[in-house]
Length: 133
Image 1 (cartoon, rainbow, N blue to C red):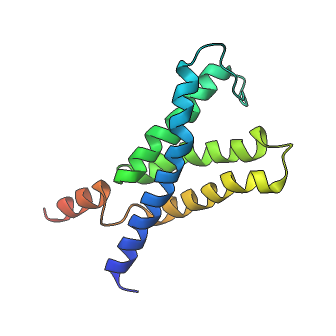
Image 2 (image 1 turned 60 degrees about the horizontal axis):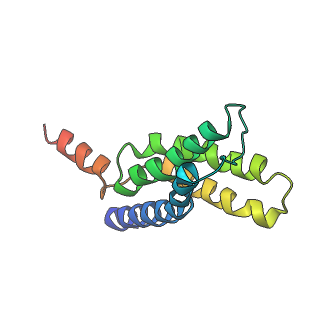
């Protein structure tokens, strides 16, 4: 496989995975500012409000960072933790079919962590710029 094709593949995986994750994170923003008490899993004993804010940070902020390819590997870490928490805490009593979605996201974010952002990203542009000097 040519390097250009590999970088297009990295771009596709980044855009598709983080774009789909945003569809889970953005609705959580409404839950944060909605009427009534916040009802959200509290796996670390920090309170449902802080747990929701951490999930929003991972699913929205970190997904946007991955989408544009900025600090990509670092941005996968909160998402990996969030996906494992979703699969094994929030959905611990659910059948595997329900756990499967966060586990699939986990696998994709591990792949992004391993591969990096690629050439078509802010990280790639910064690395290219650095190598010119």
